[in-house]
Length: 277
Image 1 (tube, helix red, strand yellow):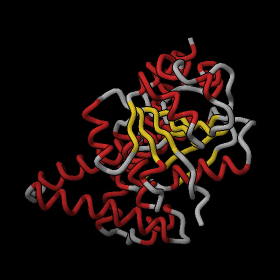
Image 2: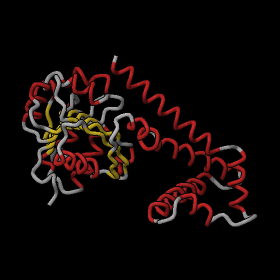
Image 3: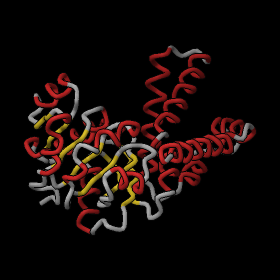
Image 4: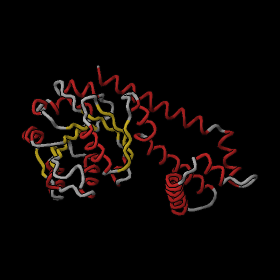
């Protein structure tokens, strides 16, 4: 039995991330009839309704969807969050609110919701679209153990979940997972370009690079060894791998990756501060 059994979940916003989370929930056994999506686009509502979901126009029915829900997932852009939630904030009572809006602190969200603070802040990433996401979660002091389980179940339907105890650590989550799929794509892109320069065609290079990235990640996840030890084990003295690693070390690639993550972290902080003004 799942903690989500018979729980009514309302999504405010039906965009890509909402659809990714919904797909994960349905694949984990949540009945589509228990999910309501409020989205202003009639086309989006038609597409979602075709999947057996309840859909509403938020300008008219979002409050009803919230009143009837056990869990409310806020999946709209942070810039419009205040305007969107103003129509139903007074309908919140005991619902668990999960926000996937980047940069909005729980304090700011609480202010937007008229002081309501049963809030969990989530930072998912785009592989959630294929149920391979990695999500960081932070909850206010008001969140009960049961609500923490509910939030975990909602986000775990689309991948790995990690809780942080300090909300400031959500910026680090952004740097290591929220924005990080783009780093992986960038690395694959560079590998493909390098392989093409060495004589392979693009199709061959892409297939080999992507499978290698996937295989290395799965190997690391399934191993008791740290990534550094796995690297050491496949690096034969004076071999081809050592030549490549030494080139990366000479170019200080590790430092450059750390600096990129710091830039992401700093921008995440700045965006959060801009939102609070």
